[in-house]
Length: 482
Image (cartoon, rainbow, N blue to C red):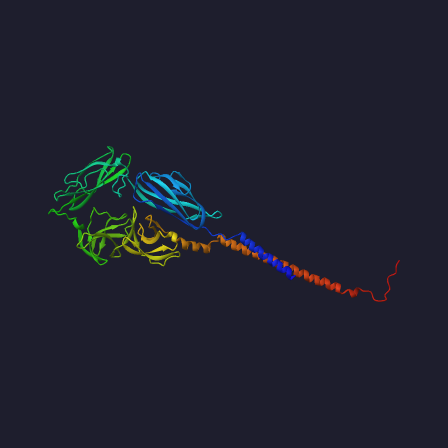
């Protein structure tokens, strides 16, 4: 009996072992997506290369997804690293592995001017047995005319161009050209009228002039808006620099205030309004209260982030400074065509999968996060002020110079999901334990049956052991035979 029990136990263990071999653990798939661009400030006629990178935590055999774009600005040309097909403003693509990182390059031709957004979404990945959905990504940028010398001007077509601009007094600088959109002209103190006359290439275009016609001493900017018959628009600006009564140019040296501010060991004067000064992308001319005085400032669209332009004492060196909570300070930044992100030091402990370090940005060191994964060495996570004036985390691609908002840190998110989700690996373990319990239950039944049979055998044996009771007594007569 003991030998039989041993044999059954060995058979049960072999069964469990074979089950585990036939059902290996499967890792739960998860992946993230990033998109990078071949350059910013692209012009009509140039080629835009969009690189979609899908990085998974384990090897994947294939991925498919969609890339949406503005078909009035971009034209699909082709792709590498798998098949791609464009329908309207959507490119459906596939990328083949096997690899932990799949890269898909898609090329577009810039055919129009304006603001454009590209988004990678519906990214589905597979390792051959398991399917999952990767997080998407998006990026927004601007394109410009192929002949426009001013990247900030996004005039759509030469049909909205001017053929001449004339002023009553003074000379335009630089000399007029249809493709140059910004001019200055110096006028004497006696010139109080900023009259402008112009002609357009499109005879049916509408022309309007913005800005006060009466000139003040200093800089006065007037803007000519040309709207062609096809609806396309271009803007030209003319800044009149009216001299004072003594013939002096009051805009020299930034037209400084008497407010002296010390920043990083140097003294600066806050500059007054200068119409020729171009603020950082996403900021516009405004005012701010500095102590008891109102000064010229530059604010983002939310009005929460304030910059001051200041010029160093006894020099002509000027720069923008962050004005925050009554304090003026230098700052690090990341510029895009649409907005300038003000970068701050990270103050929280680095999430799992990242570590804290210093990064040199615009000559200023800031504390940031970097990934421990060497495959992500080109990405730095900064804490930055967004266009809506709120502080958030942003991933910056130091190679492609693109920036993307970080909603959640991927590593921390995966760890959290692994605790709450029944993954294929957990299912395998549960199945193995279930089989083991079934085998043990069967063994228990077999043992009970054997034990029960053994008891019954003993009982029957004890009955036959009492055969003396049925023996005839010696000398008793046999029954008579008939």
